[in-house]
Length: 222
Image (cartoon, rainbow, N blue to C red):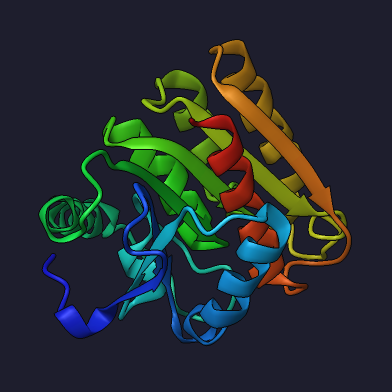
């Protein structure tokens, strides 16, 4: 997949060597300025640069494989491989276009983009760390995949709202057990990992939740 330049937006300090890649949709894109302010407030540093990439087909572009719809008729197309190819092309461009001599790349994401961030770190060692915030780890087959394969990153931040598993949808209700399993798997693999529980459901303070993940990664990956 090739992303149009208009789909890429840089926030923060473009001279920083800490580069965070975040896949976003229209809702996330509207929250980016708030997210940037939260990073500065929580972390007390401007040593970061966020490169957001807007997706066109959220369910298709970010899902690692095909599976049935959770709500309505729109399923998941399994286009993550093509999306990752496009992301890695952007990383290569940022290596030369941004001024820092030494760059560390991270990948962060919320909801299905959080799952994509985790999955991407199983595919490539390009990313020093991952922040998977309220990730869709309920996704069919994910727990088996993550348990049977080796992640290729040094640090993973996980978080979930404490009400997210309290849903009537039986597939999405798996999210609590799935993220606990994900944490156990990564901790057992000697990956530096944190699991943080936030107050509320899936739709509460997504900007602040992502900011906390970014700040944690800045702190642990020096």
